Structures are given as structure tokens and as C-alpha cells.
Length: 141
Image 1 (tube, one colour):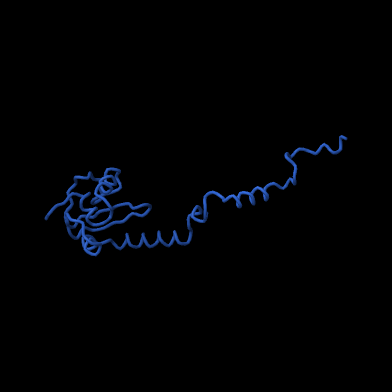
Image 2 (tube, one colour; image 1 turned 90 degrees about the horizontal axis):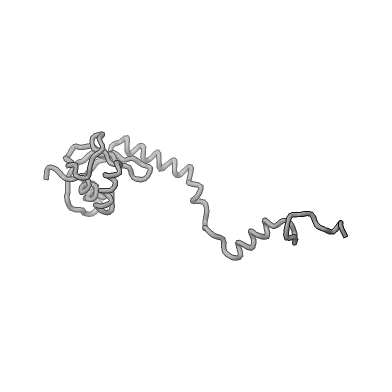
């Protein structure tokens, strides 16, 4: 096999779970071959450099083999070799995520329970038993 469609290779190399997802990523322009955006039918050959974005991380791999069948992960990893620059940037991104986690991830739960809601109401009330923040009518009597 000398050439293979890029979407089929991305699926066989286990970058994407389905061939449809691989196709959509190519259409969205998140995949480049040898520095150029490609279409899903673009034929890939051994030695091509593929850049792909997975989330916030960009991976650059060199095609080492072609396979039209999706096999186990160890076999799929033999189809490509990641460049040293790509490995370094992925490690830096992982370190940055570890040191500066997303603030939203610190929220344990979305909505408070009934007990939690009562505690919040009691903590925010602060006005005693008054129904409003206006001055009491005690002095007018």
C-alpha cells in the first residue's frame, strides 16, 4: 500500500475514535500535511509530516507506515513517530495544566442541596428577622 486517505489513516492510527470524527477534523482545518491544510480525500504517503490539534495541544507526527485497518494501540503507534518538538510542547502543556488548573474544576458540585441552600440563606441574611433592609418603624409609634 503506497497511499491512503488522510481521514482513514488518522482513524487507523487511533488519533480519533471514528472515521467520521477524523473526517470532521480534517474538514474543520485542524489537520495539516506538510504544512498545508488538506481535504479528507488527500492521499498520505510514508514520510509525510502531519500536524493535528487535539484539544489545546498540537501534535506533529511523521508517517512511518500505512494501514487501512484499525488495530490494537501498540500496532497503531508503529504507524507514526512524534517529533521531538511536539513531545516537548506536549510535556510543557501538561506541566502548565498541572501547575495552573482550571478554576472551574475546583467546584465540587453544581447546585447546593436543600441543607446547603438553607445554610447559604442563613449566612447571607444578616438582617436578623426583618423582611426588608428598610429602617424599622419602631421610632414612629
